[in-house]
Image 1 (spheres, rainbow, N blue to C red):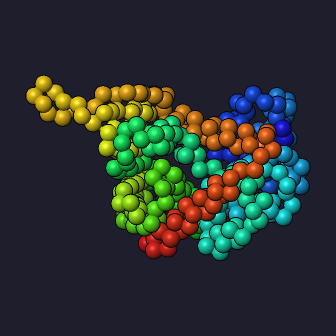
Image 2 (tube, rainbow, N blue to C red; image 1 turned 45 degrees about the vertical axis):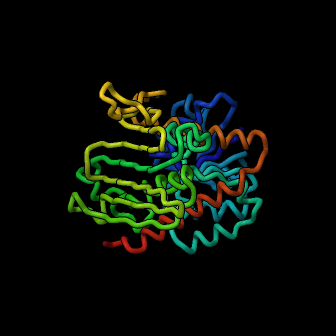
Image 3 (spheres, helix red, strand yellow; image 1 turned 90 degrees about the vertical axis):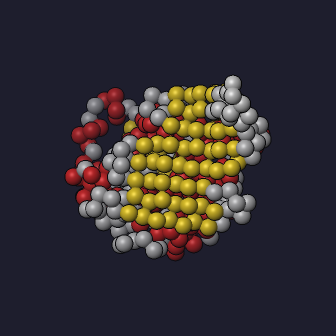
Length: 336
């Protein structure tokens, strides 16, 4: 399989390494406009045997699939170009775009093209999401009661954060809501169904950033199920996800996923006690957990590609909806 990759550094390199682990035969063509900056890194023969490096856009258009892993600001630009000249499958990092007008143009793409584009909302493929979706659908632990997420680290207190793309970019999709929050907004809809209203409060805890470095998002649904998301670049490392059901709990904390139940557990005095752990999965660290989610997303993508099957158009449309919800939150935040 010929795999074209737009981008090489940072996240693109991470995706390359994960794709390299798949056991089917493949050849990578990397498109990187600033070719000279990478030539030294591709001087070794064993690397050259894996990757063809090019600054010619036409070279990746001759591949079977293209992975768009360029900076966020350029996702729409490449999707727009590819929609005119490319007939293969596209795996595109989130978000699809950064403005309402771009979102509208993507919505108008043909049905056939939409079924060839796979947006990498990889949190849907995480161990937590898969467990929640399975349990909610089965009803084995009752009905959902509440869903909450916390994600944070101290990036905003690092000196180089002042010049980091998360802080200086003109694109609102690069701030904490657009870059991180979009995953969780998408994930709450994936687990509990479509949300009807989103509200948020923000803060600059570190004090020296252009954009807010901390945000609390509340998500409402017609069925009354609450969801909350707290995100921060200005706190100790924290990664917590929890779905509470009427007869159990699914929780991710400190790189460990646990499923607990049933509700009616009592001590010797007849008082409620915490339900026993029914299942537990541990990960080496948070990077291993999220790499596992990306690999699972790639598995679904490549499975469709190798079978020459279209992706459900609902996959494309849900990505558009999640992006639209984030943009609606951003309107009152940029520059504040």
